[in-house]
Image (cartoon, rainbow over all chains, first blue to last red; front, side, top):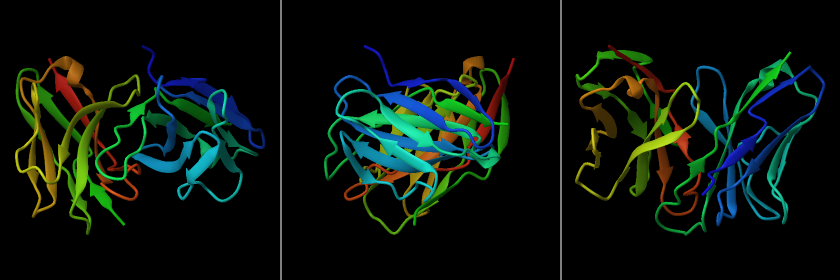
Length: 117
Length: 116
């Protein structure tokens, strides 16, 4: 019963390159969330996706960042033209159906640590 | 906007002793959930314990318990009989119930070191 999987675990990019981070949710989960953890900080919400839909991207930087969750395959967080300030740990979480009331427990992956040289 | 504050950047405790980590939060909502997550050196985020705001009874999970003071907006974590494996960053987190009940807000964390 695999948990949330993220790859790669570590990614090194030079300034100006593209970074692609992948997340496979737990089996039976169709809701995916991305969080970013800057050094010495807690996790900050970036985006919430369902299959083929972006539900809430209020935490995403306006430029260079995009996310998708296609009908088939993992969710992808894409960062174009990376800068040093993008260096962080990026965590993916997933949950089952999201109810309007109550709690939708999110299960976290191990994260991808992005280092921009 | 909700905020979560953890005022202790670092703490240490001797093995087998008890330690309490502090957390305060700010919200205008009445229904919400609070969590403590553990992040060991592996960086995996692990849910330790959660509390529903509408429940007066404090949550407990084995050696972990919380002191939830709704009026004071305080949510501290007590770890009893500390073990070396408890060494980790601990994050307090908040989420509303209802509309945006998926957007977790985290504090900056407390680094707990358990000494032998």
